[in-house]
Image (spheres, rainbow, N blue to C red):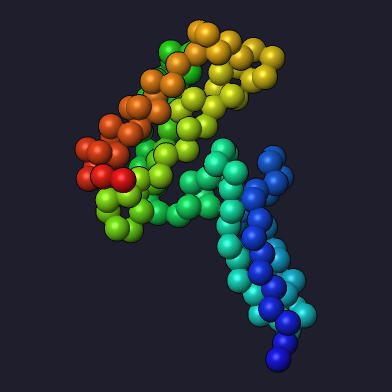
Length: 125
């Protein structure tokens, strides 16, 4: 029996997505004659949607500083479960980064707008 590799990785911010990392590990495992499986993980921030899977739904919502931003959420295959990544609508980078972040002035309204859009698309969870 040959070795089996499980790649359970998050993204490498600014370097590689979780899918790219999984593909790289699977490629090396195959070169060694090993089997492999990738299992994307996330800490819930940037890259969460990719790790969770589903069909991306794109929209425009209110960003943390009040200006419109493009944001995506995913509808899972059951058609009733939505995955919302808060960073898409109210993430730190959208709020000016760590140095420019003003939590008193910022809003998470866009996250609510994403949830409302998910409900309109049939999501109940």
